[in-house]
Structure formats: structure tokens, C-alpha cells
Length: 181
Image 1: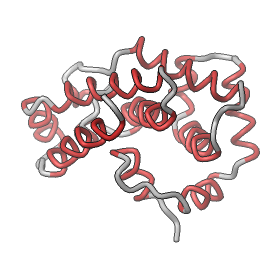
Image 2: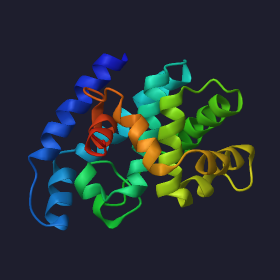
Image 3: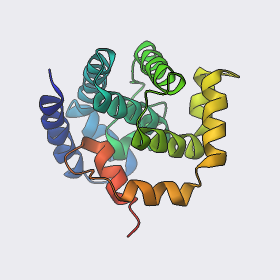
């Protein structure tokens, strides 16, 4: 699959997620019954597959999905995470590690674009614990800490506000909702 096909799949999932309502438990059950958690898990795997062959946009989206899985309740995002709303479904931890390995390679080889670097810095500032789960005292952690010193969170949001996030899946919707005018 290519990034356009995955975007189409993700947009279809987002349409379904937006049409779910009720309490957190009711929403979670509807997402489970509709197969959305399983579909998002597969989508994450497909993004990771593309990222492994060098697709930077897919790497950004796979990273976002796995970060968002721990940062937002599954009943709102449709992404299975380590919380009670995704019925013990989770993203594949080995795939998460592989994606973060690619992130680490990109950062340490300085083959990361400014947008992704800024996104990662924001993710790290919001949910540092997620990254620590995978890497304790490594070069990546040091670089992310360094970035938080160099990139002020509000300035980072302003930088990202200049980017076009339309039609970039849930990652795009997230960043569009955070834009500062």
C-alpha cells in the first residue's frame, strides 16, 4: 500500500470515529464492535512498513499513532492503547520499537526534517514517559532532552502552524487543532 491508500483508509476510520457518541465506555464498546481498534492496529503496521522502506510521512504518522495511543484515551482516538477503553487491544510493541528505532536513526544521522523534529519535541514534552519506556539513557533521549531546551513548546506550535496538515490522517487533525493563528 502507498501513503495515499493508507490516508484514504484512515480517513474512513476517522469518519466512523466521529459518528460515535456516548459515555467513554459506550464509545469504547462501539469502537470495538465496529472493529476500529483492530483496523487502527493494522493501519499502524502498514505505516510502519512504509516507514521501513524510507517513507518519511509514514514514519511521522506511525510515530504519531503510537504516541497518541498512550496520550489520548482510545475511546476518543480509536487507536488501541494501554488504557481500559480498548479492551486489552494494543499496538504491536515490536512494531513500536521498530518505528522508534527508525526515529532514532533519523535523529542521530541528522536525516530528520524540521517538521518531524518539532513534532517529536512536542510529543516528548507532553508524554516523556512514553519515550522512557523504550529508551533509558540513550543518545535519542539525550537528543530529545536537548531539543526541549532548544525548542520552546509555544514556538514549536507556532512553527507547526505554518505547515499544511490537511489530509494527513489523525496526525493532521491533531496538529490542525493545535495551530496558533
